[in-house]
Length: 133
Image (tube, rainbow, N blue to C red; front, side):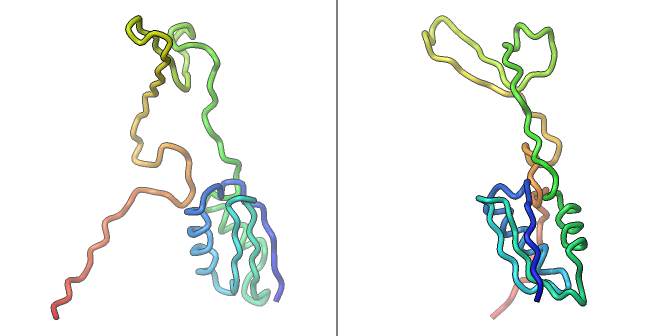
């Protein structure tokens, strides 16, 4: 059976390995999936009669794993001096804290994880059947 090796830039944690394996093993024709969040690489063994490498890549792309991971970047300018433009975090110094520096960040809730994290969406409640014994 043929295999394909793909770089997966947005697979940066072990929870992504689990999600990618679940995603790919659900595709018809996928037999074995090796995934490494450390190297951000997957190896997929598949049946070429049922699936193509392009279909595997398309499934990963649709789930958000093929694109680069975009993170906010600090501006390097204090919040009090940047003229109201967007910033990542800001510092505050108070006389009573001496040389200690504190950091804060305002985070708005958009109904999704703070950082773009493929495979991690809002948690849906699953109704469980009660069993009586």
